[in-house]
Image (tube, rainbow over all chains, first blue to last red):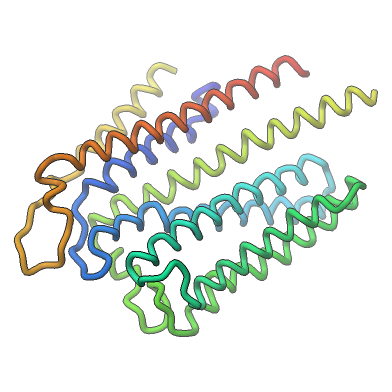
Amino acid sequence: MSIKRNWWKVLAIVLVLYTVVAGLLVPVPRLDIVNESIRNLYFHVPMWFGMTIILTTSVVYSIRYLRTPTARLDTLAHESAKTGIVMGLLGLATGSMWARYTWGAWWTSDPRLNGAAIAMLIYGAYIVLRSSFTDEQQRARISAVYNIFAFAAAIPLLFVLPRLTDSLHPGAGGNPGFSNYDLDSNMRMVFYPAVIGWTLIGFWITQVSSRLEFLKQKIYEKQLA
Amino acid sequence: MKNSWRNAFLLLLTLLASIGQAVAQTADTPEMADALRQSGKIYVVVAVILIVVIGLIGYLISLDRKVSRLEKEIR
């Protein structure tokens, strides 16, 4: 692993380790209800940011696949989507945990929560859809088209619709936004590095799994030759 | 290569140096884990999470290296 080409992996490690230490030690605003759990912001929210960024790269690969169909682009789109889904599921799980101890329930029928859950189901269907084809090119093409649909459906569900109604979740309706907490400059100092760090970790995992998949395809081709 | 690791380490140190001392505040304000901070046990929690995260990242690095080795073998 040459550092020159993989400097971003070093950056990912540094930022995530920084997040863990600073996320627990840097002073945070003293707020009712959330109290110390406001620190979840450094771990729960970056999962969603990271997921969105990685799913965006996934859809970019899918669009590129439709323009120039190569197995490589299909693999990259698929592996990115998988990492995005994992981060989204972690986001749901951490959010549910946080909700239990601030709102008093594991799940509330909240537009933001349900929107996020539906978005994850739509992406779950992407995985199911992929596994239902035997023909590789057909699989690649149809799942690329579906990926564009999934992205176009997930973004409004996650970021637009919840803002149009009232919600318990910060940053919606008439709720004190998480921009309110975010205004605290101490928290910003941790939050932004956290987002970058976790996102880079997501890209790293995607890169390793994609390379493994490329190798698998190479071996398969060799066996055929 | 060595320099890059040193630079990364220095970056981590500078970032960590910017952490102010957690200020112990008095009552009237919403309850926070002040006792946990005063007793210093919070550092135990930080250390434990660090070990877990470092362990997972180390595993990711080793997987990355294994894939690199395979890439060299299969050309």
